[in-house]
Every structure is written in structure tokens, then in C-alpha cells.
Amino acid sequence: MSPSPTLTRPDQAVSPDRTSRPAERRTRSASPLLSKGVVNGVLIAAMLWTVLPLTWLVIAATKGYADLYSTGGFEFARVQLWENLVKLFTFSDGLFLRWLLNSFLYAGVGALVSSMISILAGYAFDKFRFPGKERWFGLVLLGVLVPAAVTTVPLYLMASDLGLTNSFWGVFLPGLASPFGVYLGRVFSQAYVPDELLEATRVDGAGELRTFWQIAFPLLRPAFATLFLFGFTGGWNAFFMPLLMLSDHELYPVGLGLFMWRQMIGTDQDLYYPLLMTGSLVAILPLVVAFFSLQRYWKAGLTAGAVK
Image (cartoon, rainbow, N blue to C red):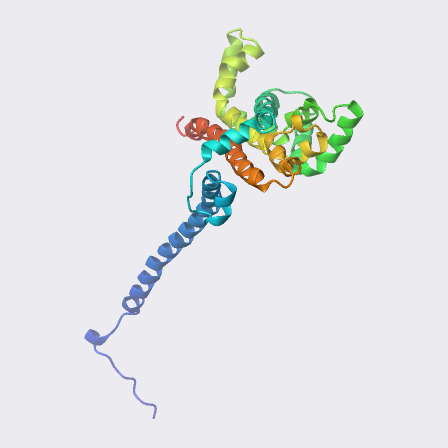
């Protein structure tokens, strides 16, 4: 005979849901905490990766050569920032100031012209119809996929054939073309410039140029500010193209000039290292100013499509 099954009273029965729910609740409560911890850890690591080198540079720019190596990297010593700045802007007849001016021309004026070209091209690709429009835009997208380092040597050879090497135009003109800027200009035009608004202005008798400047361009200011900052940052940090194009040190941008300063100064480390640290600090200030001054346009662009 098989043993009779054991009976359990109703008040002794244990529901499987009651035993599993506390464990599930603990798992669910631990999972968001773990996710937040990982995300916060990654953000803190990224912040330290960005802020610590800048902090070290600010402190190093206030030191002389002896204090730079006799004190810790994040330890202040005798502050001689003003002396370093005077040396920086008076050394070699103010050559560093000339490099700053060159960088403002290459990066600032170049970014303005490049951003306007990109906005106009993106607006045209979005709002106008012409034969082969999508094929031409496909070529633009191919340009986005090609790294800039691949096109540097062909651009140098073209500039050499045209006699533009070792000149301002040899560095300035190649930076005006931005396939990514054209793509971004078209995306912004599709998002922020309604076709109905343009049709209404054309019905009122406005020409295409007036329609663009008075109607479309104010709506595209966030895109223009974004493209300008991208172009300004890329032009200010340009190194390989000026290195190939230029041999006259008076035409150098500030980044290339600081790199080549070691050869100009020679073995005078007491002069070289303070100039290099102070020059690097001064060189990043325009980027910081440009970022914070254009930040309000980004905020306006992010909220422009939130309410219809």
C-alpha cells in the first residue's frame, strides 16, 4: 500500500507568493541602486578625467621651473603667474600674441564662414528641389564618413600645385568645407523651419534671400551656434594641416606654435617650461569663453520643438 499523503491544515498552508515576494522586492530595490551607482561612478570618473588635467595646468602655470619639479602637481608654491604672462607675451617680440591672432583668423573667421556655408547648403538641400538632389546629398554623407587625416595630404598636394603652401590661405580655405555641417544644417532646417511659414512669406511677395535672412535664419540660430562652436574648436586645435602647410613660424596657429617652441628655445628649460604651461593655459581660455557664451543658444534649440 502506498503511504497516504500528509494533510496540512488551512491555517498552516504557506502561499508560494508570500515567500517569493520579499526576495523579489529586495532584488527590485537593489537593482535601481546598483544602476545608479554604476552611472554615478562613470560620471564621476569622466569628470575627474576632464577636470584634473585642467586643474594641474592652472596650478602649473603659476609656478617657475624650480617649483614645478620641487612641489607636487596639485600643490601651490610661490605664485608667479604675472611674471610668466609677461615672459609669454614679450618673448621673441611677442610671437605668442601673433600666434593667437593667427588662430583667431583660422578658427574664428573660418568657423563663421564655414557655418554660414553649411547652413545655406543644408537649407537648400531641405527646402529646394533640383535635379539629383539626393545623389548630391549622398556625396555629402560620404564626405562625413571620410576621416580628415585621409584628406590632409591630398589637400596639401592641391595647395602646392596652386602655390598656396606656407600661406594664410593654405590653412584657411580647406577648413571652410564641412560635410558634417551641411548634414547638420539640413537636419535643423527640417526640424525648425516649417514649410508652411516659408510658403506664407512667399505669398506675401518676399524673395528667397529675404525669406532666408528674416524668417529661416533666426530659427536656425541654434544650429549656427552649434556649427560655429564645432568649427571653432576644430580650427583652434588644428595641428596636422598647419604642420604640413606652413614653414614660416610667424604663420603658425597657437597649438602648433607651442609644440614647435621647444626647438626655438633650445635647452633653456628654465624659460621653456613656464612659457609652455602658461601658454597652454592662455590657449584654452578662448574655447572656454566660446562654450559658455554660446550655451544659451543650445538651450533654446533643445526646447524649441517641445511645444507646438
